[in-house]
Length: 466
Image 1 (cartoon, rainbow, N blue to C red):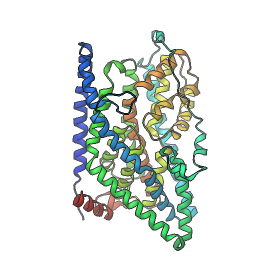
Image 2 (image 1 turned 180 degrees about the horizontal axis):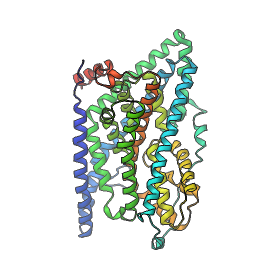
Image 3 (image 1 turned 45 degrees about the vertical axis):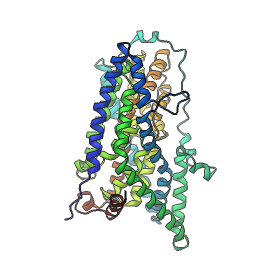
Image 4 (image 1 turned 90 degrees about the vertical axis):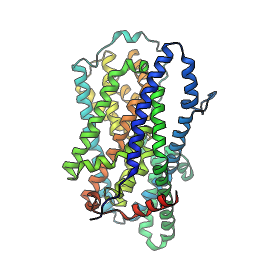
């Protein structure tokens, strides 16, 4: 039996996370006390040094933590398009049996849908329980706020997601991270073609493989050397931006949603892994800590994709073709956490605005949420913006509803941070289930009895040269 080498990066991540929460809470109290005592100018200096967004027009300051976090996120975003392209192309090139490809795609989509159903069912139960217990209740006085300046963000028809898969220009698809659907389509077509052409396209396949290795090395260095400092910076800044006074009007929605998200994350997914994959759920949760921390701190799914692929292949024993197919696709259309937030948020908005929420309306919320979440870009705050698609679709559009939606949109950062890990853990869960059903999961690697070879090679390069 080969013992798995200890992974110091997990310890560094946990230290960074714990430190970030401590410092972040201190910043919240400091901000509140300085502003209340008339010393807001002191906080303004602190904000200028550490937290200010230096890219905003007229922004004055250094923004140390903002710059550290932004450099890290930009570096991860830089790898998204080439990683999705190379990994998905290589996965498709190894599947020359179109019946197998169809079977994998069918299992993947079906599992995504079932995950959505489970997530929205839990959200509906929690939301209505909150209404019945009086946690969510009608607040007529809140309508006294000024709604004249509310600007609702136009949301696209979720069915437009289908057309997003078919680009009209190749270079435009690769020039924009939001065109990830188009890159998926191009990668599938190219990969299948390489697989059928075999030796005639071996040079192109070799180029794609080399590019994939370069991206893998780049991401390993980034995660092992930069990630802990970036996570600390991102989380502390998020705390510093939102004081307690800003979240008081919707504190019940925030707490209930975060509680529901944690239940699905820490109980729901492990049960699925244990019951349906018959694997050690503790191992699953332990290995997912790193990508969860990345998704949590960035409040976006795409930065965690590279690490998610790496862990599924090297720690869970999933075949590369399954991981490279399911995970990029899941990043684009599988958003369990977003769906939970949409349903609970809509129930909260409807109840507080005086609407009578019914079971058929909750079913409609779930359907609209699945469609909206599937079309949600894997970028920060996108899920909050598309909440209006669900709210509007159910018909909660009076003045109070618009006011509450606007308030949630402004301060939904804590919920966004907690929901994003569910999206990537849901993708990993689906990957394991599909791989297990196709007999393409090496249980010895999952159980730690065998170490994935490339993990050692990359680790030696990273440890020896950087």
